[in-house]
Length: 138
Image 1 (spheres, rainbow, N blue to C red):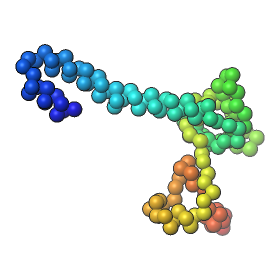
Image 2: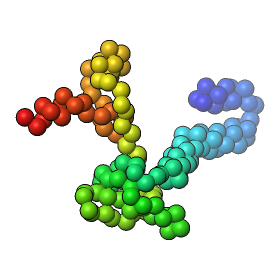
Image 3: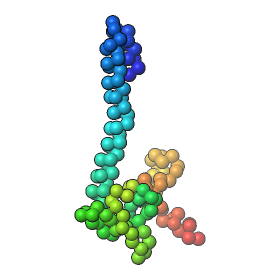
Image 4: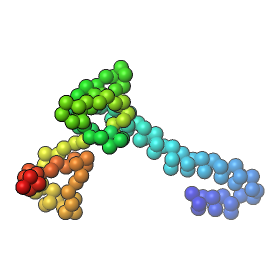
């Protein structure tokens, strides 16, 4: 973009074309750097709210983990079980992400080397292995 501004400055005979094009270029740049990504995030959040189903494990924007037990589309709310026999009603928009648990064996992750020897976070699709759970209980 800077090269284009420099080219316009060098080729124009008067300053009027530069003063006209510079604000348009800045507005276009702001649109692609700020407004468009925000619209994409809003669209993804709306899609997440529409795709929620009872039984989904989710994390809210407040950091609460829970399982959806009921969805009320008329009010736009969900009933979230955060502990046994403890449910709270929240707006669908409060859900930050859905937790996806992967049933892949741990050996395949280490062989591929994609995780670099680190375990994925639970929200990234990983599930704690049975031997680690057993090791924590000892």
